[in-house]
Amino acid sequence: FDEADYFQTRLIYISFLCHCFVGSAARFPLIYHQEYGYTMGDVLYQLVFASVVRELIFTHVSTLPMMIAIDRLAATFAWARYEKQAKSSLCVG
Image (cartoon, rainbow, N blue to C red; front, side):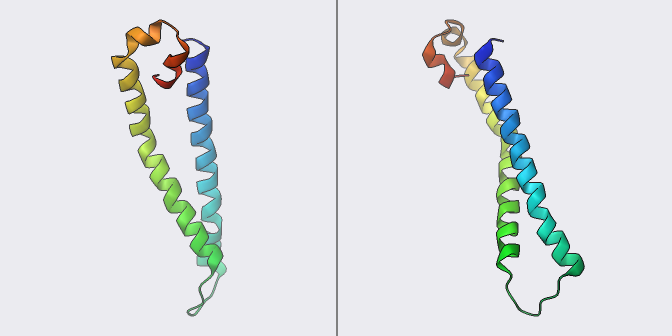
């Protein structure tokens, strides 16, 4: 691995951890409302927002392995261009 590979790998992991943190933080209003909240038909916009964020995070986390696999597939098929260490190889692998 060279510095570009480590940078991309770190970027993927940091993005994953940030999304997991936001997804976990979005669960707190939902759990709090389930335990202590009471509404009889009122729409609480923070609950709607937390639910939407939770769904977006779930979508991102469930597609992350596919994105990594596609990244590695592109790097496998473009290995000759990648090994030349050209500037354009950053978008390949």
